View 1: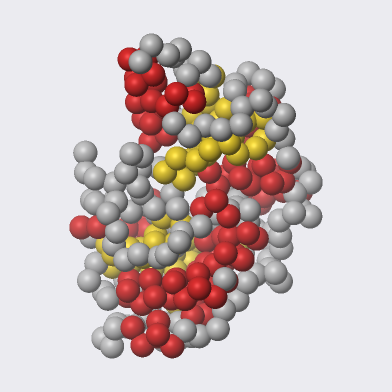
View 2: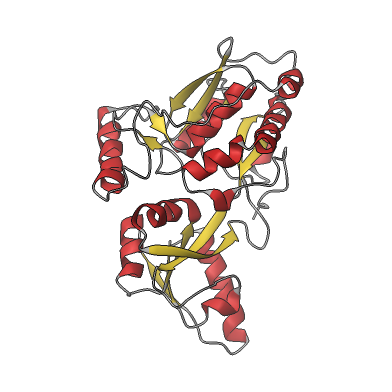
Length: 310
């Protein structure tokens, strides 16, 4: 089911204005449908050569990509309530450029991407999908962004660094219930209490605005949740700052990847394209445009180890 109903668009547009215009972020981030500042790339002969001879794109000469407009700066609707903008759309455009193809972004509900991809409705999914061993049984992956959770504190906080378990001892930390980040904090707290350190206090909020407010108001010392939305808030308002990141798969890693059908042969060409974009600096420019420099990969990989099955 496509998330393109009038309700979805109105809700998305309201979110854009709440996070952007009302907060004064319009000058910092471009939510216009024109996207004049979008980074573009030239054709990559090596990536094009790596495309499998028997692969058939959904539409000739077009890279059809499913994307869920979830939240800025990853992906969101522009001020026209229909154009999808953000880093993921920018990266999709760069890859399409490298392959010498036009880009067709297909907005979807995030839960719908597996069935749509398997049924051949899209060539790929570029929508904040993390690599897991279970997903690798049905899909191939080409990584394009670190999967990070970030510790953000008030801009004037005395906390300078949170990198390891001992750094959270005795702190009040906001996180999401039932999430990977909660699991990380619970394990860190277990290690701390076993070592005789002060326990941490977890606070649970369901939305980003409430999480940021808890930190800014002093009710919490830090917010530990996905990095991208927090980096966005930090850049547009200047009220919070990053003091540490942890991979979403800690103690392992779980990076974000372009997702394609298993065995289609497309993933390796996408990886080559990604590494060409990294070498040319286009990838880094696109990340910087959305204040996601912290999530840069040193290199794109095809089907790297992901989160294990539980």
